[in-house]
Structure formats: C-alpha cells, structure tokens
Length: 41
Image (cartoon, rainbow, N blue to C red; front, side, top):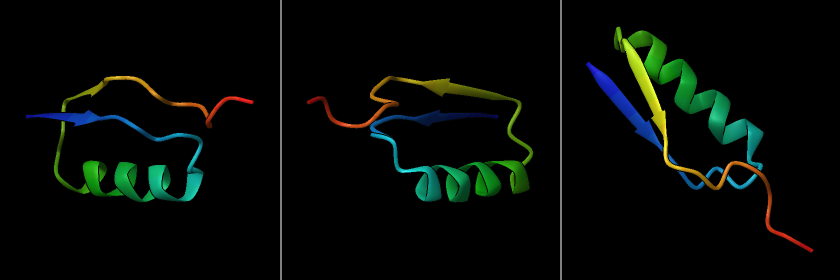
C-alpha cells in the first residue's frame, strides 16, 4: 500500500499525526508531492 502527502507547510504537529497514522496502516511507500517548508517571506 502507498500513501501520498503534500502541503505540510512546516506544520510539524500535523505531519507527525499523519506519519503515525501511516505507520498504523502498514504503508510500504510514502510519496511527498511538495510544499514541505513554511510559507515564504
């Protein structure tokens, strides 16, 4: 099974929650579509 994540925008708390959920579902691959860091200056 695969997971797709995107639009994290530096929200560490949300990312950690999503990764915990992914871990509980026996996901084999994670694809990140971008927008990992916060919004620009």
